[in-house]
Image 1 (cartoon, rainbow, N blue to C red):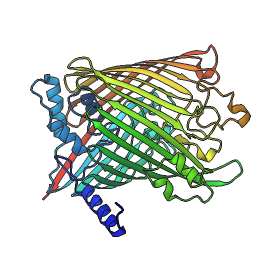
Image 2 (spheres, rainbow, N blue to C red):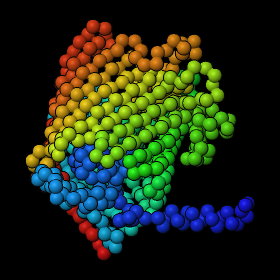
Image 3 (cartoon, rainbow, N blue to C red):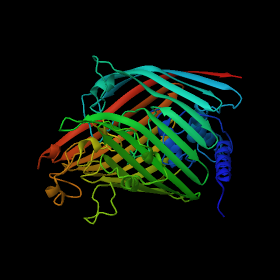
Image 4 (cartoon, helix red, strand yellow):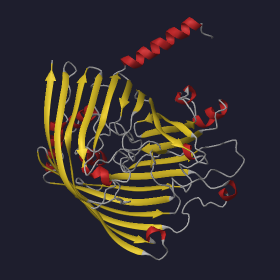
Length: 509
């Protein structure tokens, strides 16, 4: 039966009100995020892998502090080891539940000093000089009913040594204002504007569409979540890029994801992203619709020029008392109506994680990015922000790895990592092959393949309130180093950081 226009408006309004009134079972107020580099992050991920706590938001980081507090309160520690109980007690003191009837304020003053072998944050791809580094500042957040805000002000001497940081370098010290955002959260709806780090993927890997590989950047994030279905959207303006002809292109990055939860042990995601570019290009509404596929919308709107679209499918299987499997496949610029060869601009990842016993967890991973992924015929359409990948920072490689983590006394996580990285000569920053060269381009591993074998010891300690120690010591064995056939090399890649955090909390009725 056809609805009258006024009836449709009423029903739509009631549906929107229903979303706003939907509330999670325990808490419905706003909550700040837990930064991805927070000292408690490795412990939270360990407890999730060990199935001690449920993952509040699978394949979605950062987590909200209130969700972590809820997960910790639901833990039954009766059968847990003494070390696990001590860790839970420590984390519960950090993540206190927020009362709905009070305004909450917190500021953390922090400082740390470290010794690093290299400046880049990715240990598998060392880059930049190392040395003695320091960091410090203040991180503050506040919550008033449905509103949360946050800001972190810090100096960080390591920034000037990181080739992926593109800020202004004034002498030996540099600083950032990051984790700065204002968020409205009410029922099933969240609207956040600012620059928190995000990763859409398993914690062990950067996401294939949204990741924390680039330093955090301003974006608008909108989410509608119910127990069965959810939609998230991220919109950002990227840096302008000048093409070889001297034309400056304005660029926008729009990403959407829809999640389906048919059963408690299964989740399915359909993710997509669109990069718009062009001279005097403006943000266009057709790309903002999360219920349309950008690959087809561009054709429907006759906007293929200056458009690079990505499509990703993800499945997560978490049977009770069984390892958790996550698999993802990315297709860059899918064209169903193209009668040429199948697309070879692909990305994929598979992770499996579980526990060996009451103390030890494991995670195995495999990921691959084809030689032409994230690249395009037109330089402004490449998935780069300030020459750093918005998702993956490299193409033409695959990586396999295994990590073990064991919980020891004094809230100590000791671990071991083994990995193999195979890197071809394809590069996300290289120009796309000419049409006559396209058919001859290999799917993966162009030219001489460099192999990096890595073995590393990992350490996280929280021996006392406010005191945290993080360290890693890895040995890299390289074959065909720097893509020179027959060249071998050995490198040490490690870091040791000691930090102290002084928190001040305040709740106002």
